[in-house]
Amino acid sequence: MIKWLKCLILLSILLFVVYLSYLNNLVKSEFSKPLAPIHSTLSLEQHPNPLLNMLLLVEDQSFFEHSGVDFKEIARVLRDYWLYDKPIRGASTLTQQLIKNALLTREQTISRKLNEVLMALLLEMSFDKDFILNRYMNTVYLAQQGNTPIYGFEKGAQFYFHQSISDLSAEEMATLVALVKGPSYYHPIK
Image 1 (tube, rainbow, N blue to C red):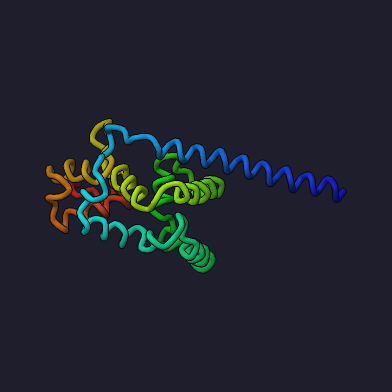
Image 2 (cartoon, rainbow, N blue to C red):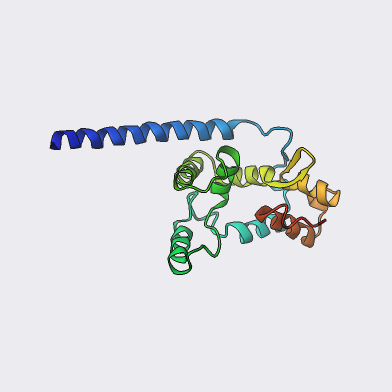
């Protein structure tokens, strides 16, 4: 019986390692590709600092401190579930949001969330923070124009305000950052 248990544990570890290897290859493959023309393609330096600061303040204040997952925020969400039966706000980091938007579905299941956490950790091991932040800035979904999605802050600036991101006022930048939470809900034209 103990021999079977040891074999089962070893097999489970082996399967987990194989699965991690699969996820790692998936992450590296996706984020090594150049961006599609539908996305913005600015460098991180081309994004205005006020926009970067607003995004980090609203979406992920500890972006430069965590390793892809903010376990303190996850603990806070679990506490909120315990106390209020619902979270007060989300715990996903920018890295997790990038993974979800690029590789996962929007379904709200524990298995999808676990994959998101594992892949976010793998992404942060493979790419630096500047790469991750820049990829997020260029690929975040901000609007829909007919059948064409609007991805990235530069394309969002052109769509909503008919100008480059570098020419926006602080208020217009704040509007774009608010759109990250819900493009149809916070749509400034509606």
